[in-house]
Length: 100
Image (cartoon, rainbow, N blue to C red; front, top):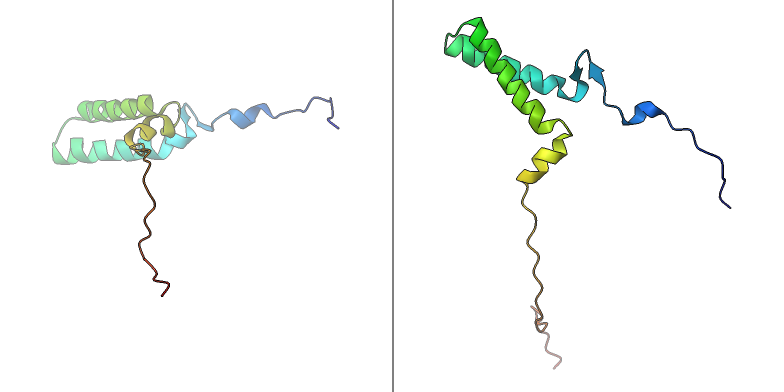
């Protein structure tokens, strides 16, 4: 019934895509963080490039640490678990039918 042969599995299935040194799933959020850092640091606050790059690196580093093992690990903590309670009550129908 069962075949005792080993099944070959592609080793790249569990790996995440990489773009140079950064994980592929974080490329877009990192660009958004870098763009927001440029806009806030350089355009609004008129900071130097050093401070702007440091703000972007801080934002990207923080985001990377929070989501390194996957977005669900960090962001699932933000969802409230449903509160389930058990109760034993007598069933009362909402609509009472008269059989007269």
